Length: 80
Length: 127
Image 1 (spheres, rainbow over the protein chains, first blue to last red):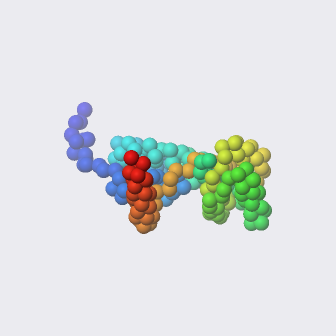
Image 2 (cartoon, each protein chain N blue to C red):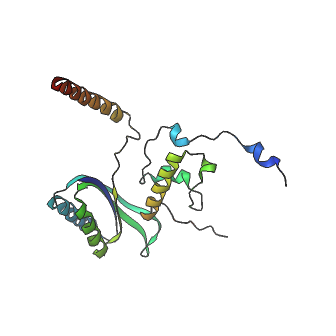
Image 3 (cartoon, chains in turn green, orange):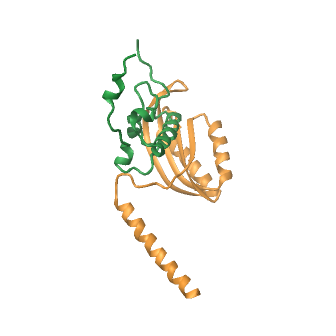
Protein backbone atom coordinates (compact mmCIF):
# COMPACT_ATOMS: atom_id res chain seq x y z
CA UNK A 1 0.00 0.00 0.00
CA UNK A 2 2.91 2.41 0.67
CA UNK A 3 3.34 4.70 -2.36
CA UNK A 4 6.25 6.89 -1.43
CA UNK A 5 8.92 4.15 -1.79
CA UNK A 6 9.73 4.19 -5.53
CA UNK A 7 9.51 7.91 -6.31
CA UNK A 8 12.00 8.80 -3.53
CA UNK A 9 14.87 6.63 -4.77
CA UNK A 10 14.50 7.47 -8.49
CA UNK A 11 17.47 9.32 -10.04
CA UNK A 12 18.34 9.90 -13.67
CA UNK A 13 20.03 6.75 -14.97
CA UNK A 14 22.31 6.93 -18.02
CA UNK A 15 23.85 4.31 -20.27
CA UNK A 16 27.36 3.68 -18.94
CA UNK A 17 28.43 2.22 -22.28
CA UNK A 18 27.35 5.31 -24.24
CA UNK A 19 29.08 7.34 -21.54
CA UNK A 20 32.52 5.91 -22.36
CA UNK A 21 31.53 5.82 -26.05
CA UNK A 22 31.88 2.08 -26.51
CA UNK A 23 30.91 1.18 -30.03
CA UNK A 24 30.84 -2.59 -29.94
CA UNK A 25 30.61 -4.95 -26.95
CA UNK A 26 32.95 -7.88 -27.37
CA UNK A 27 31.96 -11.32 -26.05
CA UNK A 28 35.58 -11.93 -25.09
CA UNK A 29 35.74 -8.88 -22.83
CA UNK A 30 34.63 -10.74 -19.72
CA UNK A 31 35.94 -8.06 -17.36
CA UNK A 32 33.45 -5.56 -18.74
CA UNK A 33 30.63 -8.09 -19.03
CA UNK A 34 30.85 -9.04 -15.36
CA UNK A 35 29.61 -5.55 -14.53
CA UNK A 36 26.33 -6.41 -16.23
CA UNK A 37 25.57 -9.70 -14.52
CA UNK A 38 24.31 -10.27 -10.96
CA UNK A 39 26.20 -12.32 -8.39
CA UNK A 40 23.88 -15.18 -9.37
CA UNK A 41 25.18 -14.84 -12.95
CA UNK A 42 21.96 -13.36 -14.32
CA UNK A 43 21.97 -10.47 -16.82
CA UNK A 44 21.07 -7.15 -15.18
CA UNK A 45 17.81 -5.78 -16.64
CA UNK A 46 17.87 -2.43 -18.41
CA UNK A 47 15.57 -0.80 -15.88
CA UNK A 48 18.23 -1.46 -13.22
CA UNK A 49 21.42 -0.78 -15.18
CA UNK A 50 19.96 2.03 -17.24
CA UNK A 51 21.69 0.89 -20.43
CA UNK A 52 20.21 1.91 -23.79
CA UNK A 53 18.47 -0.61 -26.04
CA UNK A 54 21.34 -0.81 -28.53
CA UNK A 55 23.95 -1.66 -25.94
CA UNK A 56 21.65 -3.91 -23.91
CA UNK A 57 21.06 -6.18 -26.91
CA UNK A 58 24.82 -6.31 -27.52
CA UNK A 59 25.35 -7.20 -23.88
CA UNK A 60 22.84 -10.05 -23.90
CA UNK A 61 24.34 -11.54 -27.06
CA UNK A 62 27.88 -11.16 -25.70
CA UNK A 63 26.98 -12.63 -22.30
CA UNK A 64 25.30 -15.63 -23.91
CA UNK A 65 28.36 -16.30 -26.08
CA UNK A 66 30.70 -15.80 -23.12
CA UNK A 67 28.70 -18.34 -21.15
CA UNK A 68 29.13 -20.92 -23.92
CA UNK A 69 32.88 -20.34 -23.74
CA UNK A 70 32.78 -20.70 -19.94
CA UNK A 71 34.08 -17.15 -19.54
CA UNK A 72 30.90 -16.38 -17.61
CA UNK A 73 28.80 -18.76 -15.48
CA UNK A 74 25.29 -19.80 -16.43
CA UNK A 75 24.43 -19.70 -12.78
CA UNK A 76 26.62 -19.30 -9.71
CA UNK A 77 25.64 -21.19 -6.61
CA UNK A 78 25.12 -19.33 -3.35
CA UNK A 79 25.70 -21.48 -0.30
CA UNK A 80 22.61 -21.27 1.89
CA UNK B 1 34.77 -14.70 -48.09
CA UNK B 2 33.80 -13.58 -44.63
CA UNK B 3 35.96 -13.14 -41.55
CA UNK B 4 35.28 -15.51 -38.65
CA UNK B 5 36.46 -15.81 -35.07
CA UNK B 6 36.91 -19.34 -33.80
CA UNK B 7 37.60 -20.01 -30.13
CA UNK B 8 38.66 -23.45 -28.96
CA UNK B 9 39.01 -24.78 -25.42
CA UNK B 10 41.48 -27.65 -25.19
CA UNK B 11 41.76 -30.18 -22.41
CA UNK B 12 44.23 -28.73 -19.85
CA UNK B 13 45.90 -32.14 -19.68
CA UNK B 14 47.25 -31.86 -23.21
CA UNK B 15 50.84 -30.65 -23.29
CA UNK B 16 51.95 -27.58 -25.21
CA UNK B 17 53.32 -29.45 -28.22
CA UNK B 18 50.14 -31.44 -28.76
CA UNK B 19 48.08 -28.23 -28.73
CA UNK B 20 50.43 -26.49 -31.16
CA UNK B 21 50.02 -29.49 -33.44
CA UNK B 22 46.23 -29.12 -33.34
CA UNK B 23 46.44 -25.39 -34.01
CA UNK B 24 48.76 -25.97 -36.99
CA UNK B 25 46.36 -28.58 -38.33
CA UNK B 26 43.50 -26.06 -38.19
CA UNK B 27 45.58 -23.29 -39.81
CA UNK B 28 46.63 -25.64 -42.60
CA UNK B 29 43.05 -26.70 -43.26
CA UNK B 30 42.13 -23.01 -43.49
CA UNK B 31 44.88 -22.16 -46.01
CA UNK B 32 44.23 -25.34 -48.01
CA UNK B 33 40.58 -24.37 -48.34
CA UNK B 34 41.69 -21.03 -49.78
CA UNK B 35 41.19 -19.10 -46.57
CA UNK B 36 43.64 -16.96 -44.65
CA UNK B 37 44.53 -16.97 -40.95
CA UNK B 38 44.46 -13.35 -39.74
CA UNK B 39 45.51 -13.81 -36.14
CA UNK B 40 46.08 -16.59 -33.60
CA UNK B 41 45.80 -15.71 -29.90
CA UNK B 42 46.84 -18.07 -27.14
CA UNK B 43 45.06 -17.16 -23.92
CA UNK B 44 46.69 -20.16 -22.22
CA UNK B 45 45.24 -22.09 -19.32
CA UNK B 46 42.27 -20.38 -17.69
CA UNK B 47 39.86 -21.34 -14.96
CA UNK B 48 36.46 -22.24 -16.41
CA UNK B 49 33.33 -20.54 -15.04
CA UNK B 50 31.81 -24.02 -14.75
CA UNK B 51 33.12 -27.54 -15.18
CA UNK B 52 33.19 -28.93 -18.70
CA UNK B 53 33.61 -32.72 -18.97
CA UNK B 54 34.68 -32.90 -15.31
CA UNK B 55 37.53 -30.42 -15.97
CA UNK B 56 37.97 -27.22 -14.02
CA UNK B 57 40.46 -25.49 -16.36
CA UNK B 58 40.96 -25.25 -20.12
CA UNK B 59 43.58 -24.00 -22.56
CA UNK B 60 42.04 -21.33 -24.77
CA UNK B 61 43.05 -20.71 -28.40
CA UNK B 62 41.46 -17.93 -30.43
CA UNK B 63 41.81 -17.80 -34.22
CA UNK B 64 40.64 -14.92 -36.39
CA UNK B 65 40.47 -16.09 -40.00
CA UNK B 66 38.94 -15.37 -43.39
CA UNK B 67 37.44 -18.59 -44.77
CA UNK B 68 34.97 -19.98 -47.28
CA UNK B 69 31.61 -20.84 -45.66
CA UNK B 70 31.76 -24.58 -46.37
CA UNK B 71 34.89 -24.85 -44.22
CA UNK B 72 33.01 -23.76 -41.09
CA UNK B 73 30.76 -26.82 -41.12
CA UNK B 74 33.72 -29.06 -41.74
CA UNK B 75 35.71 -27.52 -38.88
CA UNK B 76 32.75 -28.01 -36.59
CA UNK B 77 32.54 -31.67 -37.51
CA UNK B 78 36.26 -32.15 -36.83
CA UNK B 79 36.14 -30.41 -33.49
CA UNK B 80 33.27 -32.62 -32.37
CA UNK B 81 35.23 -35.71 -33.25
CA UNK B 82 38.37 -34.44 -31.54
CA UNK B 83 38.63 -35.75 -27.98
CA UNK B 84 41.05 -32.99 -26.92
CA UNK B 85 38.59 -30.21 -27.73
CA UNK B 86 36.32 -29.49 -24.76
CA UNK B 87 34.38 -26.78 -26.55
CA UNK B 88 34.54 -24.68 -29.68
CA UNK B 89 32.68 -21.67 -31.00
CA UNK B 90 32.88 -20.03 -34.43
CA UNK B 91 31.35 -16.60 -34.88
CA UNK B 92 31.12 -14.07 -37.68
CA UNK B 93 33.69 -11.41 -36.86
CA UNK B 94 32.36 -7.91 -36.48
CA UNK B 95 34.57 -5.03 -37.64
CA UNK B 96 36.67 -4.57 -34.50
CA UNK B 97 36.15 -1.02 -33.27
CA UNK B 98 39.24 0.17 -31.36
CA UNK B 99 38.29 -0.04 -27.70
CA UNK B 100 41.25 1.34 -25.87
CA UNK B 101 43.51 2.96 -28.43
CA UNK B 102 42.06 5.97 -30.27
CA UNK B 103 44.64 6.36 -33.10
CA UNK B 104 43.02 3.45 -34.96
CA UNK B 105 39.97 5.59 -35.34
CA UNK B 106 41.97 8.63 -36.46
CA UNK B 107 43.66 6.58 -39.21
CA UNK B 108 40.42 5.24 -40.63
CA UNK B 109 38.69 8.52 -41.49
CA UNK B 110 41.86 9.80 -43.17
CA UNK B 111 41.96 6.71 -45.40
CA UNK B 112 38.25 6.90 -46.08
CA UNK B 113 38.50 10.59 -46.95
CA UNK B 114 41.33 9.89 -49.41
CA UNK B 115 39.34 7.11 -51.07
CA UNK B 116 36.30 9.35 -51.21
CA UNK B 117 38.27 12.14 -52.87
CA UNK B 118 39.77 9.80 -55.47
CA UNK B 119 36.33 8.44 -56.25
CA UNK B 120 34.90 11.94 -56.64
CA UNK B 121 37.52 13.06 -59.14
CA UNK B 122 36.93 9.93 -61.24
CA UNK B 123 33.19 10.48 -61.52
CA UNK B 124 33.77 14.12 -62.50
CA UNK B 125 35.89 13.11 -65.48
CA UNK B 126 33.19 10.69 -66.67
CA UNK B 127 30.53 13.48 -66.86
